Length: 106
Length: 118
Length: 241
Image (cartoon, rainbow over all chains, first blue to last red):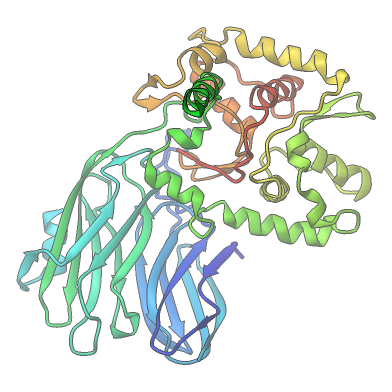
């Protein structure tokens, strides 16, 4: 379980556009680095980030080796109704992790 | 990079504008370069950005990220941090729901830290 | 006739202005932005981890609020070991002495997180090295290490960081090297690391055999560096290129 943080407001008015910042600890090993013994360190990156708002996919990102380690991805979503915002990260070597935050919409 | 852009754009018309690629022109360290892409769009059901793609010229891999948006985003603004191997040109491309594509290219100078790990 | 007095006072104040700069001031605006905003700083991942670890391990003896000010006084003299210890060492000693655990190894992620949490509790406070006389010989040893030439390139720390601070080395601005923000998120490492890791990079840079992690030389050097930076505000966790 990698450390992950989601920064999003806890409350919002209906119709507000809120910013969601996501951060996760991951080396994003590009597969280009030398391992010091003539070979390359194997690629190990996150490939996808998905944001679901009460189960509905509202945003996703395909990530490639150029994304810096400990990736930050921030985006916006409209506060439609109170519910759960969940972020799922997935990638090489079967990496899959989901974190959620609650949003109260008035 | 042109081939990757062509693959993303397909037959759609490609124009400059509507996309603002925010990134420092002179970068402290190429290992973690913050950047924000803003696309001018109302993000309504009728008119919105479907995807934003980031390309580079001189890294080992041309694609950096592809973001998939929709009207539920409210605003077409995405931020992340990328790795840049060397000074080069970067392009942010936005594909709209009406099929048109818009782009913004920036040239970035990358410096590296002097005292690195051995 | 108040104006001339005021002007004279300003002049005197300017003449005595602190010439010291944090590495923060030498960075580009976008890197500074990473440090300023806690929601952008990658070090937050370690900080949050450290906070959780503190509440599960350390609260049996320590209140989190009591950690404020602690980092300003380190390295400090440890009476049992009869020598100075760094903040990181102190945390590890707590583990072995009071929690019956094995010591963490160098650059252990959990250890870094905890050190980040404790140092962050003093963010904004000025470094206040203790006036403990027992530290004096070790601090002097640190000063000597700072001015002594090292490595194939035969540079001393002082040559770059005292005499040539503000100049350039291989395109990078040479900072004054005040350790106000450790542990730092170094963009070059794409991770969080300790002062000793950074010092080892410096030594590798002049092609010297780096001192071992936890060595007496590093403790002495840190003691001297903290005195050199006395009064400057703690920035932990800092971001550096």
